Image (cartoon, rainbow, N blue to C red; front, side, top):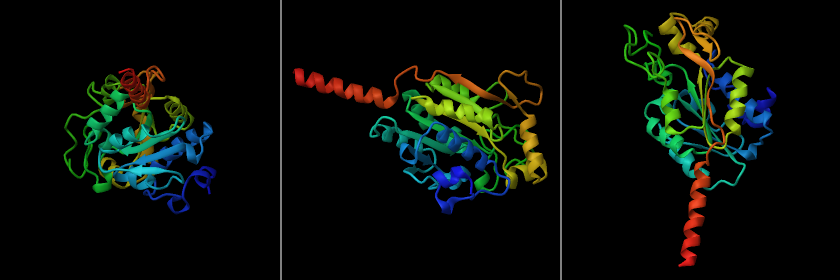
Length: 280
């Protein structure tokens, strides 16, 4: 068994509940390795999950404390939880593209506005794969899916001059990055930075769905072909994009520890109110 799994995960959740070839395991390992690199123990981290493929894979796998919520509501729950946590505790949250950029977007933006001290990892498999493979908010243009047999034609959050990370930055997030699940050390470094920010961090991770997306959009369930397809459409932030580039990878925005996190602001305000009450 992998030493990270043995150290941090419940045995019944290993090696994986995901489909063969799925990139969720890579994403999960990248985040867990970052936790380990920062010498954080089971008692230091609360792992939050939601619905969909990412929720099914990561729910209850953490040996320590965790929480789960219905679609889009995990951000409100973790915002409240930060108010009761002692200093040094970390919340990590693994969600899908629907939970982050669809039904949960309003709650996510408010968590960013408040600068809630949590690291959100958006596990993006380019569609609603847990319900059969319908297109979603981040499905690349032209992709054939169960709900777009002639190709996905709606505007999405990642192409034609739009980038959802711009919106999240404007909302108030203090650390943002995007990576592929196969980015290895390159992605791991961003995960470490996200965890070290005392404030709202989000890492958007693109990963392959072999079962649905690959079979309909690419016409094959060959894992290597899917990985190559994703990798060929990604360019680092310091590289020049070409006509096929969909995703720019690396640290998108870093203002880590530049303003107080939500819990600090609330606790400070409560102390100020108590002080004024005593003066009266």
